[in-house]
Length: 420
Image (tube, rainbow, N blue to C red; front, side):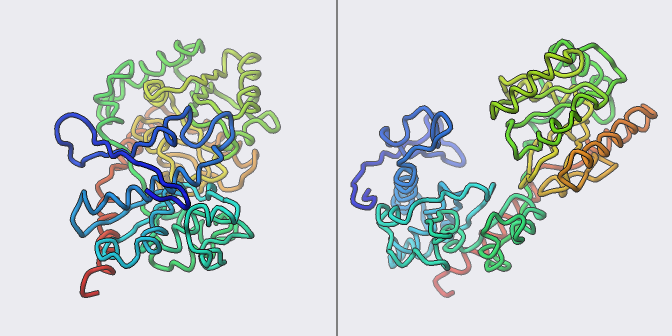
């Protein structure tokens, strides 16, 4: 595979064992992909990331005609695969089989855009005219994410509210003009969760199973979680959980600035690792308040199951949240989210019914929401149970979203039909 001036060899590996539906294939290149990290190590990106990901995209496009007959939809995700639509309409243009391929480009977090120096365009073997503000130029840089938006037939993001936010100067990460220009070719389709994996009625990872019709196991899970993190077993004290990367996006500043976490009522368990400043701050608070706060930086999915099964409430005071999955999983386990009204959080949480939403990105707004949650929890246990049951009744499966993606695929393919 030629990438700019380089020629590299790709091997295509298929998942072993019986034929799978769908088939899963991998593009193998030890020099590019057998590394300690995916994007980089020790907080720094690999310098050859543009070449690595360009190679991946080119190899996928080159092998596609040998794997499948048209019609084909190339569905690329985020800046690492954004070059697939670009290469398809430039390097592979004029080849009938590739011209008939449709492209859909999904953006999960527009804050990561794959910005590169102008010289990278030549290194990737792309025509110099692409370095234009209507194509891939972005304030003097080459923007790979923008390229995916410009050349894709349709673009999607992971929630309807986030699709609106990306069209605004405040929420578009500088690309709001590109999102607006797409018009009705840009849609927000809500993510979903696996309802079989995240089901408290059958979950083998938790202390006791429970369901909307029998909530008894929830109390057993709460007691087990408190014991696991050496917190006092206090059945009627609100227990908050937070499972997330400990980074600025997740709203940790709101909890730490002004001492909100230390004065808030209830117990708090934080599961996840991230920036040193947040880990250090939470570890110090946990050391001062071992009866109220616990930090576990050794994340695992079984621990997340136990946390959501045992917690009464979930913390998600995010600065921005394109969709979020944890708030859906939490509601399924009867843990009501306290979250900021952004992105997919606004689309999946009903305020004062299945959770508690706040608007401003301030500690004061979060504190008011925590107060509402504490007041409701401290009232009638029967009333709280009604809210749990309502949250557990919400359908966060993939069925509806899958149909919307199929509709987008059909519309994208129609533009490349032989008689189009």
